[in-house]
Image 1 (cartoon, rainbow, N blue to C red):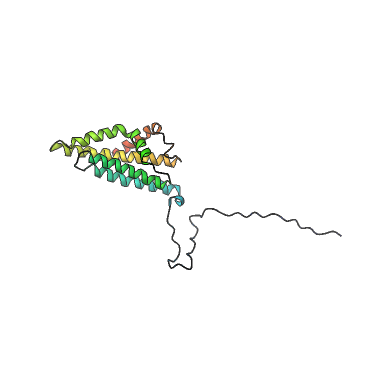
Image 2: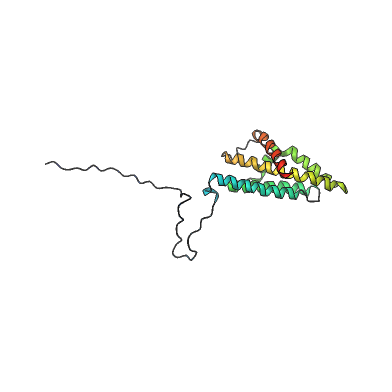
Length: 191
C-alpha cells in the first residue's frame, strides 16, 4: 500500500521590532482612566529630517539668546554668558542625538576651534569699561560676533552628529574650515 505523505514546510515567524510612524497607537490599559495612549516624539522615533530640523531650531534659539546676552553691560559677564549658552546648546543637541554629554570634553572641543574668536570677544567685552562710547561700540560688534559664533558651533556639532559621530571621535582640526564658513554665514544672519 502506498501511503500519502504530505511534505511539511517549516514556517518562519517574523516579528517587527519597530513601529511604523503611520501605525495607530495602542490603546491604553483598561484599568487606567487616561484614555488612549499618547505618543511623544522622543529622539529615537524621530525621523532623520525631523531630528535635523529640531537641531537647527535649537541652534537658532541659542543664537538669539547669545546675541542678546552680548548686550549685558558688565564686562566679561557677557562673554561668560555666551560660552555658557553654547555649552547648554550642545547639551541639548547631545540629548536630541542621544549622545552622552561631558562638559569638560565639550568645552575643550569648542575652545579648540573658537579660541581666537573668543579672545576677540573678551577684548570687546573689556572695551565696555571705557566710559560713554565703550558700551555702545562694544555692544554693536559683540551682538554679531556672539550670535555668529553660537551659530557656527551649533552647525559644526549638528554636522558631526548627523554623520554618526560622537564627542569621543570629534576631530576639531577637520572641522575648522567648516566652522569658518558657518561663522561667516552666522555673521550675515545676525547683522
